[in-house]
Image (cartoon, rainbow, N blue to C red; front, side):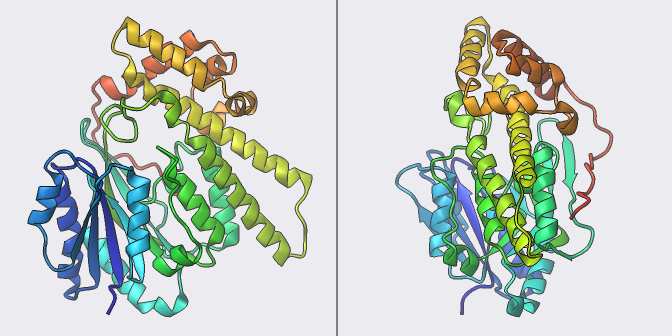
Length: 384
């Protein structure tokens, strides 16, 4: 009998966190009292002690796949999709943990609703900045809710207006996917993307889903590392490799257009020029926001005058992309809550000024100590 749910864990050099990650997934079966869940761990050719630690936890319900070459998280996740024979699948990063008790509740709901053929479940999650002791509750649902086409279109629109604040489509974790849905629609991660691969993948998922459900469960604990100390924001890659958001935003815009066309067909209407103009405006907004965010995050590269000059030169090369230049013309910082001065400097190609502003904001955000008395709660997305 196939498992009800597979936790697909990807691991690359996570020797200090992989044990707790796996244990949090195995605990779901303990809570339920039945072997509902299996764990598949893909070690992406780790060079530390990750693999030996994974083997030491090798028990019933765990499958281990070790890759001989490090090909990135997208390839590892695609292997999990291809080899999964469970009803549902949830992705887990090797340096994070799941909320076992809430996932146990989700498993009960999945078992009771198998006949409904739900393609996706979307839950809430907690982000934890361990170096500054900041906890952020990402709460999108306070009630169980079916996300129909209209709500899905509004959610994508909200996300593209403010991708740095409404992060429901930024990460694939805290989401559960029907394996049949993924495999029948050939939904995979784009292995050419080095970041924003989650956004691109989720865009393809929402484009194809017929039934998506949001749940008021805190499913996941995401550990945030400072730029320069994570795979996403790695100094081992060129700055230009971090422009995956251009592809991801295109994919999300296509999903919005596809979903809107479905709605119009149901109402026996056709799309208009104003609809396409709005989508182009949303794309520009998302690209503008991500451009500013990336500029600040990449400032971790600056360690002195030489690296500052190199960073400035790379900014000039990367951000001169025509898609970015066009988007910055209509980017509205008031909608995203971004820096007007940073956006203006990028728009006018004042690269030294861009680098200085980005470096200042990076230091304010990641270097200077913060005192937080209570958890930050960004609030719920209205349409969901």
